[in-house]
Image 1 (tube, rainbow, N blue to C red):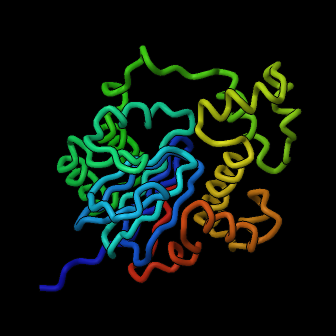
Image 2 (tube, rainbow, N blue to C red):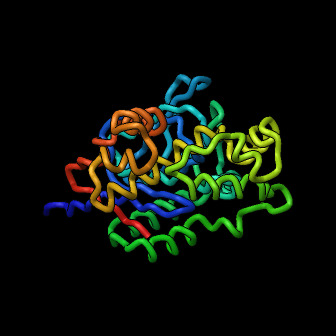
Length: 262
């Protein structure tokens, strides 16, 4: 019996993004958002600057801006980029069972999450249903310790302004002025809340915008310009430096790729 081949899925929501599908080369990540990576059909392994011996696992939680190499071993992968303000990461940190080389891995409810994400993949859920399903899977509201986590509304406002002005490269001075902070203070509180510098977050958001535009049928070159990159080479370089692979690896999936945009 021939096993059914499912198209890979790239869900693009404002708060989170999710890729579900096979990958066929190692990832060298230094992403702009905290990320949950789950191998759905076989183990993967990771190494870091501190942990050079491979650690085998099925799930790993990465803080924003953290550098790690992942050998996905041709597995079907869930790569879930979490919310920029850190609530997802704070909540999921409470259910990671192990820590190695600065990386938390092995979810307590790993088998259940694998089953739920496989269902999302096999059902090829539309973006609305998938986002509701994702909220159920992550269960952030019940996992988050609100006594030990808070959101600085000034950082939230700066993130909203960056999103609203993607075609206008506002200076850090302009961003600081918009929330009545000095530049050094904004730089400090932004990094504390998000885990990454402002410039890196801005590039991360531009990748998101470019992916949406490509999903809407724009060419790589046009999507890059619309998202605020100087050209497609700048987009490709940023994509590879943050996600550890060329855009073509995602865009030219042998089993096809479906953009799921809400």
